[in-house]
Image 1 (cartoon, helix red, strand yellow):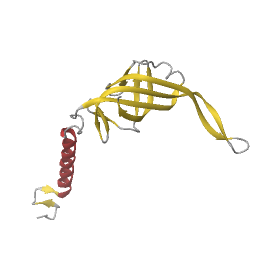
Image 2 (spheres, one colour):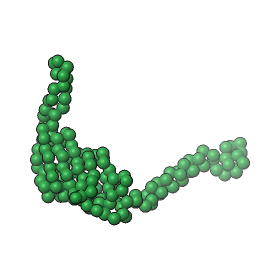
Image 3 (cartoon, one colour):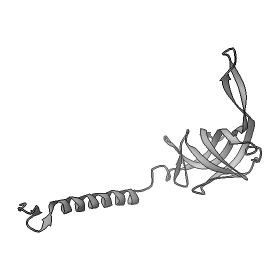
Image 4 (tube, helix red, strand yellow):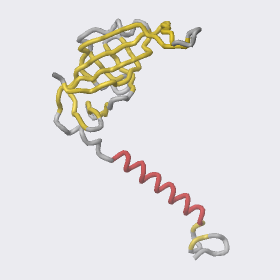
Length: 162
């Protein structure tokens, strides 16, 4: 099968064959990723859900420029994520050890805590909610447009709308 020159059947080098097989395997992997159907759940029935977002390090003023009724979009995909239903803003702080070893609450300059609640039509699954075929699970962080503000924020809760 392999001759003295390292060729298989006297025609192809064994190393060339291995490279060709690796390239074919890579093409098959890419093709299956590209042509695999979208995740289940996007075809499920939709319902109104409440998504609560929380940011512990939003820039000062970001939360105050968000208003009830503002549209909500994901930054990178431009997926519409409903409208803002409530906004809570408070001074950001952290705890550090004081001189006596007891925790001391210190303000974080230039930051604020922001909690934003939105309502959106979505498909609810065990993994989170699907909006326009994109999964949004609790704990995920995204860059979201809330009206005039753009905030890097975490999905804190998802619940059915009342």
